[in-house]
Amino acid sequence: MPDDTQASALLIDVGGMATTIACLTLDEPEETILWAAAPAPSSGTDAGRMTARLKRMVESFGLAGLLIAEPVLGPDPTPLDHSLLLLSAARDALSARCRTLIWPAIAGDDMEKLSRANDRVRMLSGLIVAETPGAARNRRLRIETPFLDFTDERLRELAEDLRAPAVL
Image (cartoon, rainbow, N blue to C red; front, side):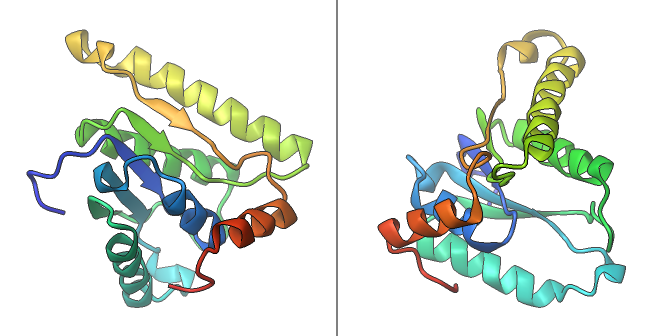
């Protein structure tokens, strides 16, 4: 991603259709950075294939750029790992001077997952405010979870309505 890129949002790649649909519903794709954590070497994920897929998404949707961060998740991610991933994305969003962090996670109708994800966002928002020094504190980072309460079926229906590509 070029240093002179002006971005107002950072979109976390969660894999699958949710990221594609998030790209299709962006208000300003040309001001949005696609963000992903590199796979851990022990995860078995092909980093080259992942990077190629993400580059195709950036090009296809006219996004501002791509940022691949250091690995965060291991082969068997824990809830803490997911919090660290969100924190890492938030740090990069703030560094890029973004105003919005988009996390297209899906919890569906699992109330425990939904509650945990909402708690994660609320706590991260509080941590950002508490740990941001001085004048920079006025530059808030809004965390959006556009599909958090979606089920897989509801996401598929939206994909059909938007004519989302099955594979990029």
